[in-house]
Structures are given as structure tokens and as C-alpha cells.
Length: 467
Image (tube, rainbow, N blue to C red; front, side):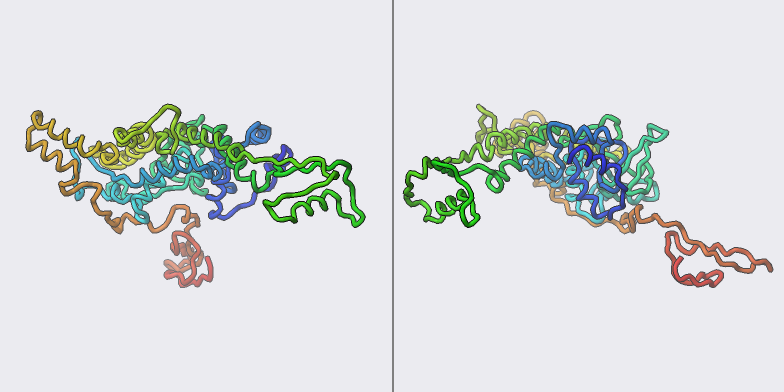
């Protein structure tokens, strides 16, 4: 697309698209384009202004979309590992430093979304943060005390954030419906330049992602559409058009190729030279560059290289330290970038004395021999009974472990009946008339909170076919 095509696209009339297209549009939108405060419903992703659009067209490298970035195995590996790992972790609740039993854990923590399992809810939150740099929670229901009892993961590409007059309370709209700030929770990987939206590795590392995508596409297109010849035949003369209209070069190539493969060929003085080209498969598929992309993806997302099937020169991993890999993964990637934001956002929705935490003990456990040696070393310090109780709890022998707790259903009062974006129609009131005190007055009966309404007004008996 050249500059004039971009200008023609920008000033073309905007047409509405169905909501089902928003996710597809958001995947195809450039991942590394810095997002503005607003977001176009037509494209599903906030589009750059005119200056930024021209800059992207004239850029020496191409901005890759989120879908193209996820097509790189290293990036897909990092994103899926982060999202699915967060989804499999159980959440514990602590009150005043004491862990609550499973029966006392709030239902909001056990099953935030009534329509999804906790695994899907936390996985989608981490996925949105890893791919788009932010996640949004909508408080769907509250109890009598105003506490949240159910949450819904809102797709970030459907949310618009505008600064407005009050910088502390920006205007948040979801598919054109303005939402109360108290009901919308934003979790960000890092803030953007306006501190209104979030940015993640795919938005910040545009050049590195472009290299990975271009190398991937080059390797895929080399054998299908590459012009690299396998054989060059040099004729001792000039080739022209034959008597039947067929080029002499085409006829010579057809005669050469119609013979059986892997058999000797005999040429005369008309053929000066036959040169064979041996394709360098490693260079053709850019294996070195793509292997280096694995290291870039590991650095972008903070994932240990061994989990990305990538190892730097001189590094080694043996059976003695392989158990520490996931500990490093939790401490350098999951905990600061994903777990802590989710924990604090969830804790903010609970009572003031409660705190939600992910149970990551399974990832940070040492090998069995080391663990039992640690328990024995603790006996002189805390006593045999305390050490035995600690060992039983740490090894999962004590009932009530969060990892083995069942997933309950949400209570009926926590299940939302409809989304706020479905409540866009105005209330319908009867426009008929009735007699009150001998005077003909407007009816004004509330027929429906959201139209349309079909039926009879119970007050003035007026019939509505569609109101």
C-alpha cells in the first residue's frame, strides 16, 4: 500500500461492521503501532492518525499484526506458556496473614465468571496482557453491600478510553455504551505514553517482531514462490522464437525435463554448459536468523531460554538444576508481569482484610530428596510436631489444599442476565390517553425498560404492534 492508497483509505466513508468482526480486525491490526486514547469500532483496533499512518507506510520495516506475530513459533510458545500457566494456578485467600479454608474463600475468587471456568477466566486475562498489554474486567453483579460477586473479561479491542475533562476519571465506553468507572477494572502490563491504555511486548518491540515475521515468511515462501533455479543450461548461440511460435528456450527446457530423473544426459555442441545449483537449505530457510528469534522472544517476554527450546552458547542444563527453571520463570516473568497485577486487582474487589494470591508452590518446589532434608533440618528449630505438620501440608497430605478444591457453581444472584451493551434501547412508555378525574390525560405507563414492546397497555388498554 503506497501513501496515496493510505490517504484514500483514511478519508473513505466509514461503514459499520458487525461485532463478530472485531476480534478478527484486532488480530490483523498492527501490533506495534502505539495506540491512541480512542478506538474505532469499525476496525476493532484503534487506528493511527494521518501522520502515524504515513510514517508506517514509509517505515523501512513493516509493522506486523498480532496474528502474524502469533504465527512465529517462538512468540506463540511464549504467549501460550504464560497464559496457560496462569490459567492452571489456584488462587488462595488470606485474611490478616492467615490462609482461609476452602469453605471460607469468597465465591468471586473460586469462580469469577459464572459462564466460564476459573482456568479460562485467568488464562484470558493473562493472554490479553501478553498480546495487547492490558486486560479489562467488568463487574457484572454486586451483592447487597456493593461488593462484586461476578466478573466478565471484556475484550480490550472493544473498549474506548478518552481523557475527558476529569483526568482522574477517564471516559470508558464499551461498544458505544459508557460504563461506570467503578465497574471497569483495567490491568496493564505497562502504561502507554498517555497512561490511558496498556502496552505489552508486542506493542513495544515492533522492530524485533517484524524481523521474526519476515524471516518466517521468507522461509515459507522460498520453495513455493522462490526464483532460485536448480539447473542452468547455457546454449552456444542465440535462442529465438521457433517456427510454430514456441520459444526455443521453452522447447529446450521441455526436452531436457521430459527425460527420466537421475539418469545420464548427453549433449552436443549446441549446449555450451550445464551448471547445477545445490540449494543451501539452512540459508534458504534462514535457520540461524529464526533460531536467534527464539532468543528475542525469550527476552521480550522474560521466559527462560530452556522453556523456549533456546540455549545461549556456553550454557548447560543438567538434572541438578532443571527444577529451578520454573522457579526462575515464576520469579522473573509470571509474578511481576502477570500474577501480581491480577492478585492486586482481585484483592481490591474483596473485603479490606482479605488478599488473594496465586498458589505457585508447585512451581517452586525442590526435588523430593531436598524437600525432606529441609523438613528434617527444621525439627531442631520448630519442633518435631510443627515440622511434621508443615511437611504434611507442603506435600498435600493435609485436606483442604487449594489445588485439589472443587470448582463451585456461582450463586444465582451472581449470574448476569444480560450485558450492558444490550441495554441500548430507550424505555418504552405508553403514549395513549386515559380519563382521570373526568379529565383526559396522557397514560405514560412504563411498558418496557428497553424496547421494543408488543402487546396491550394494562392501564389504558391501547394495543401496540411494535413500540
